[in-house]
Amino acid sequence: MRWLGIPYRPDPLERSYLERAQVRQDEDLIVKASVLDRRESERFFGVPLARRGIQPVWVEITNNGAHSYRLRLASIDANYFPPLEAAFVNHFRFARRLIAFGALAWFFLPLLVLLPFKLLAARVANRRMNAYFQEHGIGWRPIKPGSKVEGFVFTSLDEGTKQFSVGLLGLAGAKSFAFSIAVPGLRVDHHNKGLDALCCSEQVVECDEVELRKRLAAMPRSTTNRLGTRQGDPLNLVAIGNFDSIISGFGARWDETETISLQSCWRTFKAFSLGSEYRYSPVSSLYVEGRCQDFALQKARETINERLHLRLWITPLRFQAKPVWIGQISRDIGVRFTLKTWNLTTHKIDPDVDDARDYLLNDLLQSGRVALLAYVPGAEAANRSAPRRNLTGDPYFTDGLRAVAILSESLTTPMLANWA
Image (cartoon, rainbow, N blue to C red):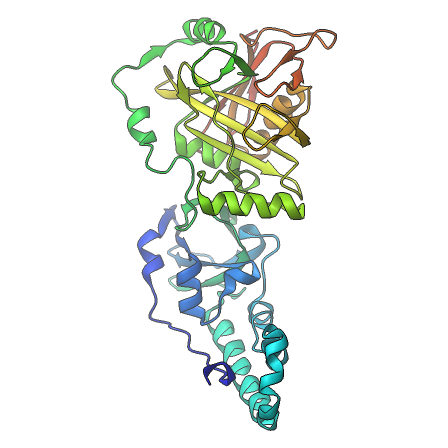
């Protein structure tokens, strides 16, 4: 019976992840990186690392400079797993396999005479696993001039787009190379939406600062339902930059959103029932001028009931040749009963939507990718004593300003502008 065996069959010839490798370089260093998906990870390392929350990141560094460098592993993931720890959590354990069979385990009791042999086989397989993981970990060794090193860093599992930086330290100083790599597997909401084509549409309106401020103030006050007959959450954010700049600007602190499907609905139901986290939970559709959001991002707490979620729509406007996006940001703080949704429940939002807006700005500043921050009117003020309500009846109040963030493709120092 196959379950009694202790097979460990990694496949070092599995290299399909290299097709997604990205390259960053300067005058001294060439850095390549890729992220393995669940299938690639299991084939290459011979065990289902993703089930243990581990995701290998492949890195290759070529040093063409005159000084040695060392890779800062924590720059890729502050909570990375050393190779032996990553191997240990995936070790074969005979008792764990037996317990997994539950009551059926009693049928295998006569085979316990084989237990010493199975324990020995598991020990041999685990030693092979330790050696294999160590062999393929990139480690902390120096990268000397004229040399090349490659290997894996065992990071925490991320689905969708993986954001990380490869930091190196040398006698010439510190260097950092930012990566944003899409990992197959998660069906995100902007999949097949052709955002690049939307950004390059011929019906664009190039604006100078005066024209941009005027047009942003004239845009709709809030989101609506599909027919545009009812007002929803306020449009309280503007982001300026191409899609990649936005994803990089939000960095690893925000997650993409999965499309609504049977699988994502089941994951949402499980997370809701167990009070657990689901970082990529779908968000409901809101509309601006008859169009559903182009994509959404979210930042979850420990349970699915508490999260910040952001919806963005591309506009025809361009500023300094960059696309202008209008968005809606609010904070879910719980779940309540309602007759306004098909499943009779909805997330309850924090009525102070300005706090969610300003939290997002402060979080964006941490990425170092914000060139300019400003506020413009347009969302229309609503007092605490006379709040407006969104589509599901939650009250909210606001000062009526929209935050504007111009994103940079590289690290920069932010400036604050007076556009209100």
